[in-house]
Length: 515
Image 1: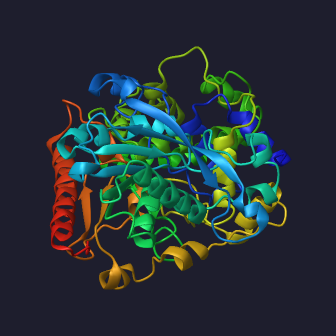
Image 2: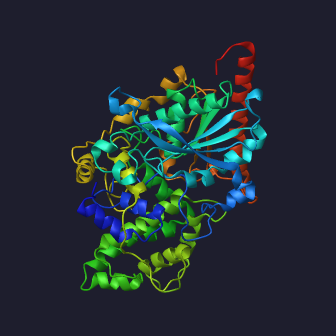
Image 3: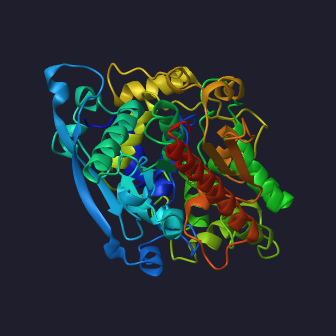
């Protein structure tokens, strides 16, 4: 499907950026400012040597990367009706690592990573906690790619899969969960591992899927670890401005003066743009490689910059502190925008020019996430006047719907469907009645944590939060310089999972299959 002119403009303006930052910019573009920044387990290589910049180095350091075997499964196109075409299949990619598995004869567990809104390659790198703990549990590791992402596309090619709303109609979280269920059952049967317990693990959108999988398919997975999973950021369960409020809090905690400078900068940009040759002046001051076309070119770029580093404010660098130190420490006589530029340079480095503008092409990850945003993943993120360090951009459902209509003719967003399908309202009371064995982990510096489960619901549905943690930090591989609080968070999660497995083993031995 050809993108709308406005979408082409936004993609072309910022395509030069790392994908993670591009996604954030597009998500906060006006008038689509209420669109959520993409969840994402980990962002791509970007401006610094932050611990979040993961590569295959991790696999090489922690174990032989040849232990990872890529396989494909003939996955059912449509799990939910019986039309002839529903029985068509597509090749779904998954990866296994059996290097540490104790085997079916010992009833050793299977850890399944529920793939998210990107290709599988980055998931394997990001979920280092699985490799780290496979020897302890003698676990088989399985990573499943989400349909329509990576190479797991129906209809043969990405072009055909994304051709129109008919081919995209099989693209939903419910279909993805059913994919995981069918593939897991197939794999267990082929390995004669029907009695081996399964624990699903996911982060961000994949963390939501892990939690939902446990609730929808408790007969397949005995438990779930859902990291940074904002399952409550739907309908009116939490305040719309929650995401931006946490970003603001992160910067204010780092430095009150830094926060105030950023808050003033938007109005200073407006003031300069209103002057003669204002855009040319801004282009020069921010050393833009190409002239700025409008003030939002710069505003969106800076906004996405702050959002990304708040979301991935990882130790030991703590990028928010780095940015604020640069803003506050700008040379004497610096005005507001000089300080903002210093903050930008602190993470991007000193360059001859900065590409605040550019040209490029399409990206299937963007297209896939847009489809999900315009169908069921409708997260009402926005902010009012004087609520955050950003200018007002309240969530407007009509504006959101109009934007989606530009992308997909005759497709209506369903803002209430996620809570109808998976729940969310009165979650404590509801899950106390029938839920069990879910860990909701969050780092409270992650803006998405406001949509997470932050308090224990029962003895077996527990919340583990860290004050200084960031987005999906607990899922990443252990490092020597990890702070003690992060080590404790991971230890607590693994100890809980060990308890689930022991309970399952005891129940199996006595003939009771409760878990």
